[in-house]
Length: 336
Image (tube, rainbow, N blue to C red; front, side, top):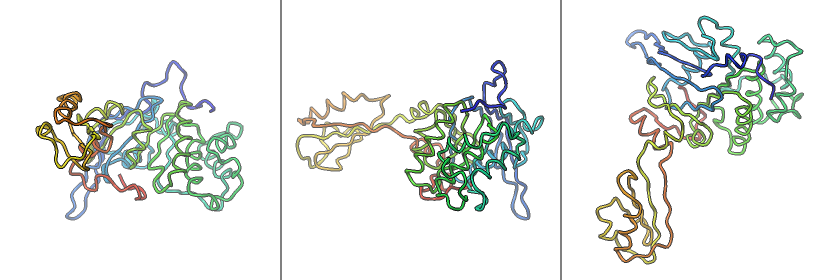
């Protein structure tokens, strides 16, 4: 990939691609409706070069946060710094440092991909000699569709074209707002390959998604926002260790009618005659103690597996009580 023209010299590279301090947004109410606090003094630091996930239920404040970063919504209070540029003190530099891929596929159906990228580059003031239209189309796998009308492209192609469109001015920060909502599994995989390539080339990626497994696999750091507050912001692996819970599934060598007495003091279930499931806290109980209780019952172990807590467990725990906490994957994205 071509180096970022907006990137400062190596000596002045910011430690964080995005720094947010005390960010507040209050929407004034009317009539009997009181003011709505969409963001409540958020503090957030997105490391340079990271693939950062921003998760939260519908209405949590994700879209408001992104729109403030993009200059589309005015904040009530606080500070937002993008690639070293304050959005108030230096709005032009801040906007040139960020590219946003919105949820909606907003493109003229009668423009070709090449025309769209050329027009977008012109809007950002990129000189013709510095435009990378063909390189961007190649990077997102659309070189062979450069001169086709946008209306003839598939949904996945349009999503990739939106990524290329957001990258015409080579921003060091790329924001993807629900980019794979409504996209099938294969197209989602292809899109993430392109996003990983951009990230490896040095682009900091901020991703919002309702697909929790997607965030778990892709993101090195995850923040969870709920009711306008950041309720968690940690490296993904650290976040996954938050819930001290595992399930041990044991396949035994004979049929059982009930959970053995030796396992009565444990949280054990018998979903099938030969399958025992024991739920335990690794910090309080060792696996060998569970297996000893199985042996005490005179049972042989044929096979066993353990199930770790996943991001969905943590999400549900941290956003407990939120309305519509985990939207169904089939839904085409949601407001935040």
